[in-house]
Length: 358
Picture 1 (cartoon, helix red, strand yellow):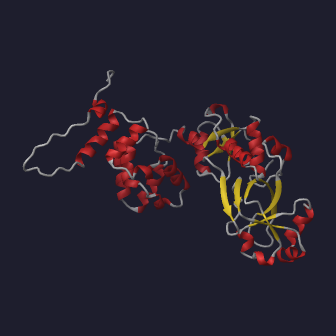
Picture 2 (cartoon, rainbow, N blue to C red):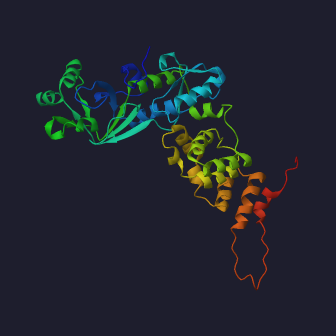
Picture 3 (cartoon, one colour):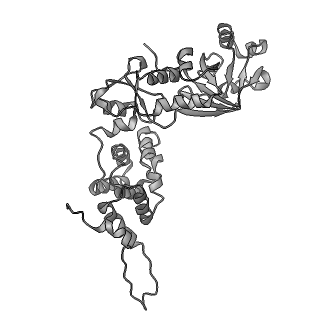
């Protein structure tokens, strides 16, 4: 049974199958402090192989949930495990922390890559892939043995052919570079965890499917389309007390952001750039990211019409919500001398006509 940690044994054959011919082993500290364990990770200067692994783990291979039984959530998911579990349950899918027992992985973002630079950033023990820029690596020496202690000594003794440890912010808390013996690492060092290697190899061999978390969430019966009535309810909740706002955060996560664009724009005028109100709720943060509500909040009604037309989601119902708002924003001076007639331009009048089947 495999544990849910990025630190898995490095499979050299899997690395070669994934295009990494000249990988270099590095040690990384799992936590801060002199007694922290050090684990292996694979480094390469081949960015194409690195990004290929990212693509394998983030590109959806199926959206047919009826063929799946057991899922493994990739570390660092932007959606809470409880919400994913609830949505999976509706399809008789269970979740597991053992990726070897899973038949698919759940990915929730376009990239799994974290970036660390120089000596100030901490290596993320939840990141499957890390781009390490302009950094240093510690090498075996008596001075390093004295300063870094037993764990460093044991690591170098057990892996004599490796014996390079990433110097990051965790070590910098206790030891400056001036105290230690080190080499410069590659300016662009692409670090790949054992878990990333193993999962990517299984996906490559079609032994694991990849499903986007949004596919799972959008298939849930809890998802609902935003209506004028629901928008009114949400407006009242926003204007009420903090308890109602907390409930509103949970309600937001159930809104299908791909439907009723005009109402989504109206919602953005109310809740755009307000995610800090639910700073501890990662599901709300995820919904804000995928819904683009903050971007919609920057548009006025006329700009929203143009935006939705460019996205090919504009229709008569949505136009008839937004056009009166545009009309209210018209400003005309010299009213004492002139009368004016306001008409929608010909190219937009098609959105006012009824379809033949209506």
